[in-house]
Length: 470
Ligand code: GLU
Image 1 (spheres, rainbow, N blue to C red):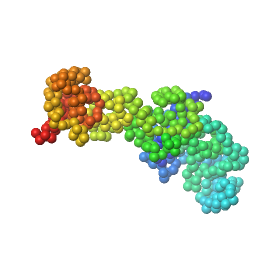
Image 2 (image 1 turned 90 degrees about the vertical axis):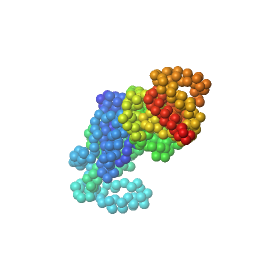
Image 3 (image 1 turned 180 degrees about the vertical axis):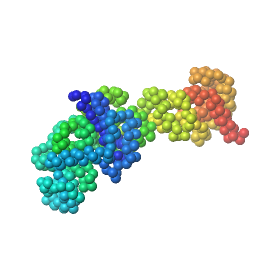
Image 4 (image 1 turned 135 degrees about the vertical axis):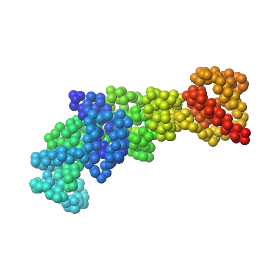
């Protein structure tokens, strides 16, 4: 294969956000292009004026950017390419490969019902095919499809697919309102843009022979096709909202790392042995259509969460801080210092499955705390008042607040009181975080710093005193 010849594209219709299925299609096209040092094109198929929205276009672009799927050309917008489609219609009409059809929708409907009655496939009967009609109000442009023979293509995933041309209609290329049909616009665009590989969901398999006939009519080279298997949920039914979020942005908002999602998407129909985790670079190196299977891909949110936890654990602190800061801001933290966020996240990396979870776990570092009711009742009891007061003075007196130094201060303190760390750990945890669950006590004290620890201890002491009515 000549690498220069690899041109792929992702042509979403902006009639909804970018979903898991679309993102998988985009990823495979991107990987295939990157693997072969080819070109990846983004094209927005917004010919359906009533259903396409600017917001959806923006969300699709944002989702692609977030996933790191960069494109080399585009975004092109079909709505801006009317002249090109018109020009090619002229070419087809003048070469006799297409014709004007004046049949009214009512006539066609009548014929359809009659055909059905006779047990025939409802198909355009070719009334206007040889009439040489011209443009007229209400007229459509149809492709003059071959009426015999077969159209065959070798799908790179599904193998050879063949269909009798008799089965295919003289399909409409341009509607009576002047708009163009999907099958026509997609072929004009793909051929004008030099697309050599069409990789898309297998819901488009049936369109492919029709598109091939349009290529032939235009005398343009036919691309290679690869139709990807469908995506199911863990219960083997087609992936839907029942299985959890389906839009890419929902996963972003949930605090999934882009590379974790990318990884899960890559495994939807493609595999490389049993390997579960891949870097983007690895995916580019390893990706090949030969390893796209025929069986459906299973998207499993639980697995994604596990994978996300692994990625969080291994992520570079600076990178993770950049990703975490917006989540902290959403929870009302302001004036965040990146270095401080890095210190905080180091204590949380090992336990968070998502950035949302991590941000919630990190709140006590950046916001005033309130004591959770149960934790307060259970651990901030009058009996611990004295110990906390003593701890306060011990901590005021120390100069070293690094973990190892704190550990030493504590062992002296515990010895003096003849108590175990267990006796003081939970009251102290609630004192510092408001909750009964947190990262290690010494880790959090180091990150909070001496001033804040002293302030929170003093607050908890006054709080307990007020319970006692002191
Ligand atoms: N706009 C079409 C879709 O979103 C593109 C299909 C294709 O790849 O040809 O389904």
